[in-house]
Image (tube, rainbow, N blue to C red):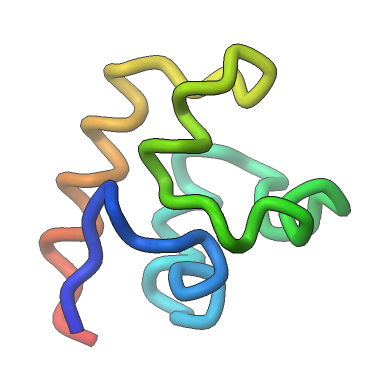
Length: 71
């Protein structure tokens, strides 16, 4: 299964590889209590919220790393 910016956060966090990518670019993301409330959002939807503090460069880097996963 491939992941991209349209993948739901819950699906990303359920994959060990995708979770590692998120943690690499957003340290503490997987353990943040607020993350669970956003599990139905896609990565791009979350990045649209200023409070998420995910710049377009970081989103691009995450998507690039997710594309390289073989899971």
